[in-house]
Structures are given as C-alpha cells and as structure tokens.
Figure 1 (cartoon, helix red, strand yellow):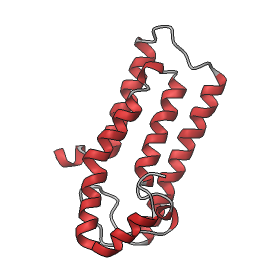
Figure 2: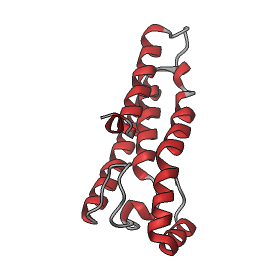
Figure 3: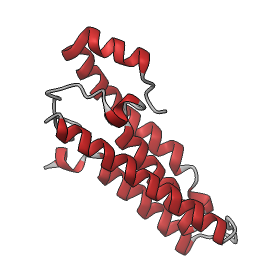
Figure 4: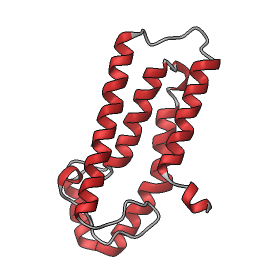
Length: 150
C-alpha cells in the first residue's frame, strides 16, 4: 500500500496543496500581478498536461509500464522521449509551476526546485539505474543523444 502512495502524482498533489494553502492563508501581501500570471500559469499547466499525455501515449504504444517502481519492458526513445528522457516528470513540474502562478502563491515558489530535487532523487535516478542495468549500451547511447530534462 505504501508503495502505491509513493508515486509522483501523490507528491505533486502534496506540493499543489501546500501552494494552495500558502495562497489562501499566508499571502503576506505578495502577488505575481493578476492576468498575466494567470495566463502564463494556464500555459504552463496546459503544456505540462500535453507533455504527460504525449508520454503516456508513447509508452502505451510500446507496451511498457508508466508506474515508476516497475521495470520497463521496453526503453522508449521515440516521440516526446526523443526530446526529454523524463517528459512526465517535466510535465509534473510545469503543472506545479503553473498552479503556483494561478494560485498567486508567491511564497510557494521554492516548492518548484524542492519538487524537482525530490522527483529526481526518488524516481528519476532509480529508474535510470534500472534502465542502465537492463539496456546497457542502448541506454548509454540514449543518454548521449537525449538530455534528462530538456
């Protein structure tokens, strides 16, 4: 049960809730500035959701798992994965940043690098280690031609 709670959407939800709580109860009179921040936040959330959807479709096309703690049956290098090795996590980060802007949660900005650090340590590095062991030379070539984030 705890392993199912230790998945990126749960961590994203926790960060979003913290940002929302900050925006409602601890504003400290700070603001990003209204309509422009709302627009940019919407763009970031939308872009993050598109990245995640593209990655899900590509992984399904290759019949491999999207669950972080499971071993991949195939190393996906096509589609959005030819641009980023971690488009779903990048999408999570964009959604968080966008919602922080939309909530006008200025003091929640440090959650963005904190979330990135947490996702990298808990999920990205262990996943890449599993891929490195399973796909050896193919994974090394993939790392040379495709960056971890963008």
